[in-house]
Image 1: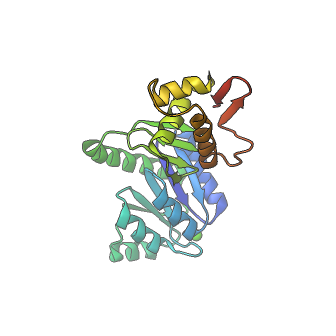
Image 2: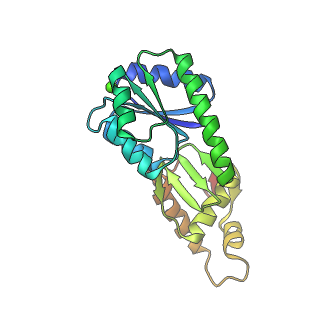
Image 3: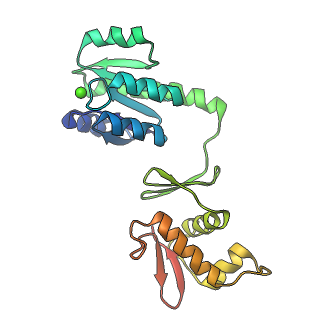
Length: 229
Ligand code: CA
């Protein structure tokens, strides 16, 4: 599945685009302002960006330039004015394609499909896909050992990362503190069982919206912990 970001200030157009892309099997996020769109485009891994030209705060020209300075992903620019196309070309912003409003959703889907296919061929030669675990707003990239909570990277120590990954890979199972300690620290470790409690607390502080009311790592009284999906 491909992840697409739509940066578009007209919500009805954004939703129409999203609906058609979702029907075609893509995962779609929408941002309505230029500044937020730019921030999200830079901080999150998307496979393609659909970028409206006229946006509040930061316009499409600037966003295209900034994304292109950091990423190679396809950028499909959308404009209501034919004159803008010449401007986009003239500025050499690195946009991959242009589409004029109003356009048919079918045309948009076809263009998106073509650019994704081209980009995948390009990327396929360069790298293999990382091994990732996604549970609601949590994304664990096992290959790069990185964790993202609601698209923001959170830094974990080695043991915290190992504990989180172990729990997330074994969801809906209860593990006692002893089991977790043995698994993560080993039988002959000098540590104490209490270190498990400390690590669970740290994980919650990092991944839970409200650590006192955890949605991921539940405490099962008298038994241990369970990762909920
Ligand atoms: Ca606009």
